[in-house]
Length: 556
Image (tube, one colour):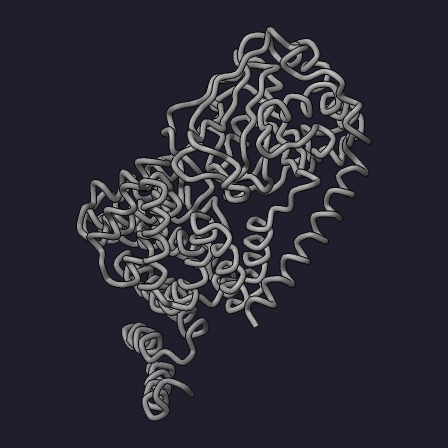
């Protein structure tokens, strides 16, 4: 039955491939026949040369047998550029007139500036001329082992990307095509930072590529864009299909990933299994399968898949090391988990989520200095990520550094709706701690001011808590709110009483009974202040309420 389904999937792959190629020709240049290219690249472009770099130890996902060793499959142009800086500038001007600099979209963990060429028709006209006259002949020259003629090449998923300080980089990823190209559209002196790197070469080993030059490679190599610290960097990226070659492994893997996202985990596993039967060294297939097993809580089996990936890639895969850390953590192997996270950080120090997770692990082991260093790194990578700010503030507060803790909680309050109410509750604790210290030193007015702040942030946090998700963490914070707000009423009232303002104290405690009508503690402090003021009848009513709540377990 599995063989039959696998064959059906291959037939579906072929049908999808034909449709994708046809769609490509609706928007991007396609040659009608091989006669369009009467002269080869080598004969017409003697002044452009190429540097070849290793693809790593694992061949491309599809057509692995055709790509012979050594796998020097990453090609970067040198010498004469493919197009001039002036021409690139004109293209960028056209694209900006089409609004490319106003758009953004999600890509992995980051937001990128730019747009698809499907939405930039004038820019696409220039690119189609490049495909016809330069890129397709060039690719056919570079990869003759899989490209029978320039006429079989098809461009799809083509985008013009804009990197700057607000959209600085991509995560480490692979491209969704058998071949991919990256064209530099901006002079390197127009920006600081940036550049393409390949993970197996080392994150700091950025390939040199000035305006007009390009990188050409199989799509399944892990790579990323370095952070642009200032200025603007444009690149044009394109994924390619080959009309007479169906990428069965990639399509099976992609369909498995889609099934996993839709919750059909068993079907997803089958697709990854079929893909691996065609290419046992498909590392992304192994990782995606491990994701399914992680969801199923089959941690030992998932770990085997991930360790296989790391063996194949000689531990040069930060995502696999990160997942290994998660799997080891789920199995209670904290020391091994931390070691895996540290290795992942050494490969990809600009992964905010990774640094955040490692910080949590180090904190749990008592390494406060290492914990805070990871939170500092995570927030420098992604200042909008609230979790590291929140945990950093908590760690500082626990060590007695309330001033710096306040700064971190204020930063966290600027982040997403899931983090903001948590940060507000922590800010209330900071204000309460400060009020206690001021009151102990005799500064009751200062203490009162701090408690007003505490009450304000707590009242602001309440509706946000009600909107939070139903995660265990969210429920924990929600459960802490009532005791914290009640304590705020208590401290505020005590400070008022200490200042001799019994009326204000009574008002505060009365407000506590209104906010928490089923709290015996609220009625007790309210009854006590009434007694101190000689309001015997109302104090007795408060005592009766306490008795009633006691009979009904505080749920009257």
